[in-house]
Image (cartoon, rainbow, N blue to C red; front, side, top):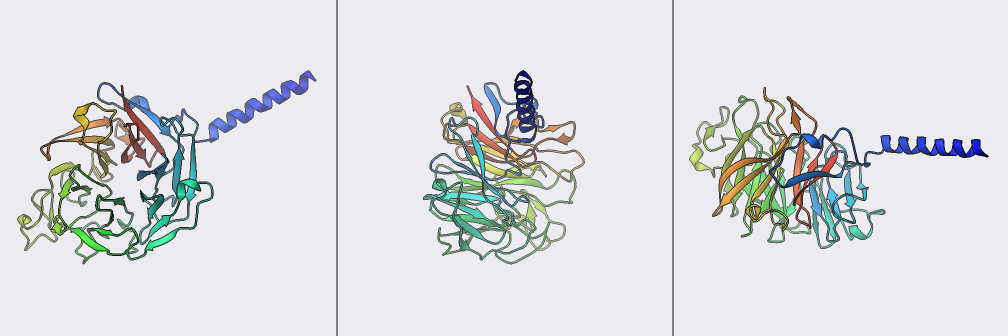
Length: 371
């Protein structure tokens, strides 16, 4: 009897250790070196979930579900949390998709952007464990894989904004390439909103309903040019210069001839060169000090072709009277001695005012809180 009881206890301990070792959602993932992350005084960073392989763009459902897209993994996740501080579970609600980076939520439905299609999952929060078959809202987008992954978001006008990246490092292509498009929620009324945009993977609207976005600069002009960009498109029809001009006034050596950079709308701010500025949000929560209200957080994924790596951080753009006045590091430490253990992709304000940061390299979502 004693031998049987001891054997059962030992077996239970072994099973528990195996579960902890192999289950990526268990807290304490040794690959997440949060002790290296530096933040301003008063802030802290914790793991919201570390069982989200390839985590990229994020959006909130009405009932507090966090939806997360991926790229190469082909999956979309739903993350639930009872206390809003740590995830209770990660559910795969779609898989086998073509780079489903973008997610957006409206009227109970989740919109997912593949490379060439926009899908819609209706009444999704009521059926997370048995998701419905998606409705194809639109299949009007190009199938090019290069810069084909899409960030999507509903604007204050009720339209869904969808970028179409340039299918190249630098090239001259007709619409719809290198644009931000928009359409009605049912897929009708598709139109180009802005042009001359190489590859935006993040945008948001300010309190006045005006669109701002990040744009990734071209490669192979050296370590320090061109910069990534923060751009502002308050009206339809603006052109931001790609492939002819980069940054404030850098003429492209291949396509710039015959074009003056003054013909195009310049960025409101030059970001770091090759930092891969992706997701951005205006902070509209109630947790952070008031000085952060309506300021811009940007997830910098990090360089891949620069002699000295740069990025791999979350930056803060401070605004005054609607114009940038500073560009500073808010959270850094994913890059250590030239090697990155994580790569921020998107930022999202949580219902309680915390800032969530997705990381596709570490497969995690972090929660940055204050106080």
